[in-house]
Each structure stands twice: as C-alpha cells, then as structure tokens.
Length: 575
Image (cartoon, rainbow, N blue to C red; front, top):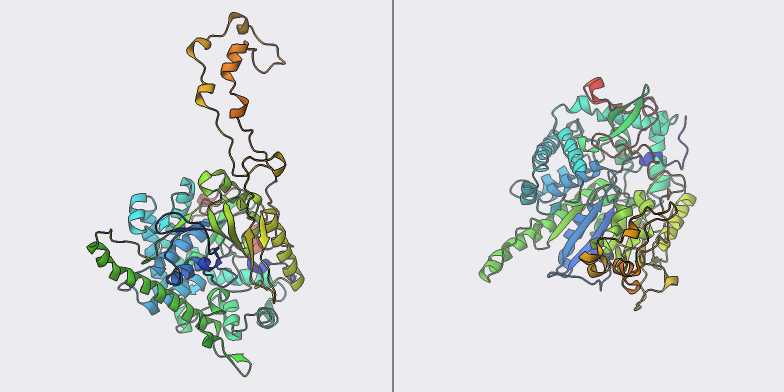
C-alpha cells in the first residue's frame, strides 16, 4: 500500500508542535483596542496553539510595547497538549540559579521537539510531573507555586485525567510502557506504505520540492532526514546521548481489539513536517538567514537554538528589571510584585475541552477578546458563535496549512478559500494582502451598527439574553394564591393550563413592554471539516474519552502497528 499524496496522514491525529513561526500576539491586536484595568488588560483566545510558542514570544517582546496585563485563554482538544504547555511554561520561568540559560534552551528544544531525549531531560520531566501530580489536587498550593497558570475552568474529570497524564510521565518504567523507537518506526511504515524502503529519497523529495519551495530553505537535508529516521530533530550533543523516550509525546486512544475496547498508548503525531518551522525558519537576527553560493549558512537547528536562547534571555532580563524595581515600589508604599514573568503581568487560563461552541453563552466572554488565534487543525471550530466572543474591531489570525507537506498547491488554495468563507460567516472581514502566499490569514471583526433598539430584520445578537421581567409582576399578592372554586375543576385535555379570572391573569402575566422575546438561532454551528480531504482533524468518532485523553477509537490495533497497551493486561480494558 502506498499513501497517496494529499492524504494528510503525515500530520497525524494529535498535534505536538505548530506548523507556523511563533508570533508576537500583541503586534496582531488592534492598536486602539479598548482595555480595562490598571495596567490595561489584553484578552487573547488561542485555539489549538498546542506548544505555548505564541505566549512565550509575546511575553518576550512585551518590553517593546506599553505596559499591559495579558490574559491568555487556551483551548485545546486533548489534555496531553494542556499538560505539555504547563510543563513548557514551567520550564521557561525556571529561576536562573536553578537552571542556566544554555541548559534551559537545550532542555526546551529536546522536550518540545525530540522523540528521544537525554537522561537529564528525562529526569527533569519525571521530577516536574511528580510535582504537578502533587499540586493538581490542591488548588491553593497550585495557585501559590504557579500563580501565572489557572486551571479553575477545567472540569473535575478533566483535572483527574490531567493528573493521570502527569502520573504516567512520572513513572519509572520508561522503555516498557512507551517504546517510542518502535512506535515511531510503526508510524512511519503506516504512513509511507510501499515507499518505506525508499524513505531516504522520500524525505529529500518532501524537503526540497515542498518545504524549500514554500520558504523553509534553512532546513538542512541531514537534520530533516535524521528526524524522519530517528525522531531526533535537535541533536545538540553527541548522538549516543539520546536514548530515552520523550513521554510527553504519548497520547491515549480507545482501540477495538477482538470485539472489546482497550485503552492503549502510542504515538499518533506528525511524521511529515517536523518541529523546525516554529523557531527555525525566521529570526530577528538577519545574519542567521544569509546564504553563500546559494546555500544557507545556518541550519534550522542552529537558528532554533539561537531564537530560543534569545527568547529566554529576554524573559530573564524582564525579571531582573522587575526585581530591581521592587525595592523602589516598596519605598513608595506600593505592593511588591511576585509575578515570576517579570514586570509584565500575565495569566494563562486553560478552558475545558470542546468549549468553543458554548463560550458565547457565558456573559463574561461575550465581545471580550481583542484577538482570536485559530490553528489549522482547529479551523472547524470557527463559527458565528465563536465570533460573537470577539470585541468589535478585534482581530482574527488563522494558521494556514502552508508547511503541511502532504498537501498539493491546489489543496492549499482550497483550504485558504474555506478559511475565508468561515471567517466571513463568523462576522470578520479579510485584510488586504498582496504578494506571495502567507503563513497566516488575518481578518478584522466587522463593527456593529449603533442603534437604540434592535430591528427585527437585523437579527438578534448571539450574546444577547432575554431581559427578566420585574419581580413584582411575577409574584402575585397572597390573596390571589387561592384560585376560585370554578377554576379548580379539571381542565379539558386540549388546554395547557386552567383558565384564570381576568384579575389573576393580569397579576401573573407581566406587561408586554417588560418582556423581550428570546433570541432566535440565526445560524447553525459550522462543524464540518475545513480541509478538503479531512486530514487536519480526526473524523468524529466515539465520544468516550480515553483514561487520560480526549481521543477517538480506531478500527483495530492491527491497522496502525504502533500500539503500546499499558502494563496490566485485561485489568486495563475499558468496558
């Protein structure tokens, strides 16, 4: 069997890293965005950002902008991505006396993009997972130690599943429970099919004829081929040092085995593009992007290491600046800051899985967000209901599938057209663009017309709620509680309620001018697959979640060849 070009199977069912460079989200927000509080607050909603790269770059670039407080609301479709972002953010703000800049940068790249890691990185993952497993059941301790993270919006069962993820990461039996080398090879065999024996030539073709043609020329053939073969993208130390599997890349699914559902763990992530795009193809230092004799002087791994080190250096400088300003604040009678991010206060709020279609029902989310970011794997969540959560004049940034090597040029154009249709249906207007294809599609929220009263032909606002009638109209006086004798007779079957005398009806029925009819649903939720062939998101399946993930069942374990049943045999079967 040969995997057809354009199938999108190389993207996988679970996204572990983004397919676009990291953005400074503050630069994407409208410059005149209305803010509240002191300092002004900036509310940003991210759907499927998966790796916190946009959050880190926004915080690193914050000193270039006026002082603002950031509220990041993160919504994912699986709890493993939530756990990875918690671990990544915790690593990013490790104090310098505990972890140096170079060690932090190397640990970040290995944890984030390597399938195999060094012993030191595996020990760090295990130690931090044990810490998070201890903090999750204690909200007060979690808020005290990690004040920049908020898990309050998660459901209780999601918190329990999140604790199970950290418990698996903290276990000592690494090789037996998650043999990533074998799972990676099985995933590659399933993806390439009959082309597996020519996988070296396939990787060169995908790199030179697709990624290089789309702008990622700094990705080196050697590093790309090594990642395709071994899952190691960033080989900073000796190759023999990368031996232990990166447990943060494991995900759970419910599989059908001999007629029964079995919970299994495996690797169902990307094996086509790689983690080089996020930090490795762009840089503020243009000298890293120079070419000599038509060849880049630096590869994507070196550029990634430089960009990540610069990012952590900027965060450290902001922290030191805040530490120096703290004694002055105390001397002036102010409250000393305790935010580990430094002088730019922020908080990351993790929302429940699948909450996108119902966010507009919560009054504190209606017309709140200044920026909405949607990844290419979550575009199907873009709807008028979600657009109602963006403030008038707000911005929408959608990640396109430019660096998804499985897609042809015609499919990329179809995907972009579909994104534009969904954005316009959600109430956004495309921003003008001239030149080569972009990595992101940018839109602005249509301004709402100002009127004193809602006209029927304009349609009700999705966030508008019916006004409650006055309480004095709903509560009749005590003498009207006893109905007359003739009203106590059973009513005919065709009537919905017994007839009331005119005076009682007037007391129970509020005046017409005090009642606003409930809003009608103007549009159905757009939940169709966005990409042409349904390759960016898994098709809808059984809604039953795995023990610690939000996954769908598959036909059978023999179809994937990359399953790793948890130890314990039948005891782990899900009835």
